Image 1 (cartoon, rainbow, N blue to C red):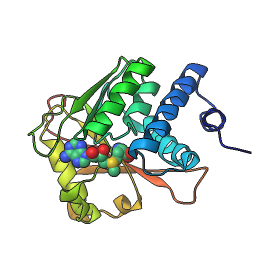
Image 2 (cartoon, rainbow, N blue to C red):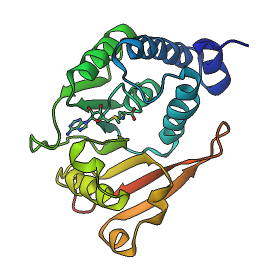
Image 3 (cartoon, rainbow, N blue to C red):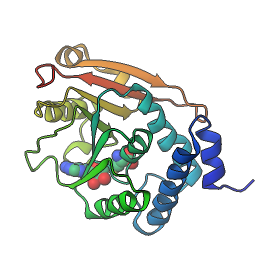
Image 4 (cartoon, rainbow, N blue to C red):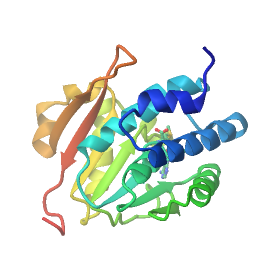
Amino acid sequence: MSFSIESTIEGVFTRENNKVKKLLTNYLDLLFKWHNVSNIVSSSDNEYVIKREIYDSYQLNNYLTGNSFTDVGSGGGIPGIIISILNPDKKVILIDRKSTFIDFLTLVKAELNLDNIEIIHRDVLKSNICLNTETVLLKNFSNKIISKMNFEKKFLYLMKLIKKSKQVSKAYMLTGSPVLELSKECLKEFDVNTHVIPSPFFETNRVVAEVKFENTINS
Ligand SMILES: C[S@@+](CC[C@H](N)C(=O)[O-])C[C@H]1O[C@@H](n2cnc3c(N)ncnc32)[C@H](O)[C@@H]1O
C-alpha cells in the first residue's frame, strides 16, 4: 500500500479527534513540501518521520506539566508545533537562530491558525536570553559548540543554560538512551527523572528526561 500522510496519521493518532488529526495532517503536508526544498527534518522518509519524530513527540506530551512551553532549537517545529496542536489553551514559544526555520514556522502558524504560538528568531547562546515560560522543551538541540561534546557534557551545558532563566521550573529533553547513564555527579547537580517511551514501530526507544530546577520564581 502506498504511503499517505492522512492514512498514517489515522493509524498513529487513533485516539485524537478529527480536528487534531486534520491539523497534524496539514502541518506534515507543509513540513514535507518545505523539506523537499530546504531540508528541514532529519529524514526524507516521510513515514519514518511520522512514526519516529512525530509519534515520540506525541508521547512526550503525556509527561508535560506547566501552562507555557519554550521549544529551544525548534527547527521545523518538532516537538513545539505538535505540542501546540495538542494543547491549544497553552502558550508555546518556538525559538531558532536560522531564518529558514523561522520562515517555515511563521507560515505554519498562519496556515493552521495556531494562535497559541509565538516565534522568536534568536541565538540562545549569544543573546543572554531569558526564557519566560514554566517549561522548556529540547529535542536534538545541537550546533558547532556542543556537537563535539559527549552526551553528559552537552546535557550539563544545556541544563546550566536553561537554569539561568529563573522562571523556568522544568525542562524536558526528548533524547536517546545515553541519558539513562548520567553520572552520580551529574544527578547530584540536577534532579533528573527519566521515562522510556515505548515505540510500537521501532526496536529502539527514545527517552524523556525530566529535569526540575530549584530556586525558580514559581517554586
Ligand atoms: C538538529 S536541529 C533539531 C530541530 C528539531 N528540534 C528537531 O528535533 O527536528 C537543531 C536546531 O537547533 C537550532 N539551533 C542550534 N543552535 C542554536 C542556537 N544557539 N540558538 C537557537 N537555535 C539554535 C538549529 O538552527 C536547528 O534548527
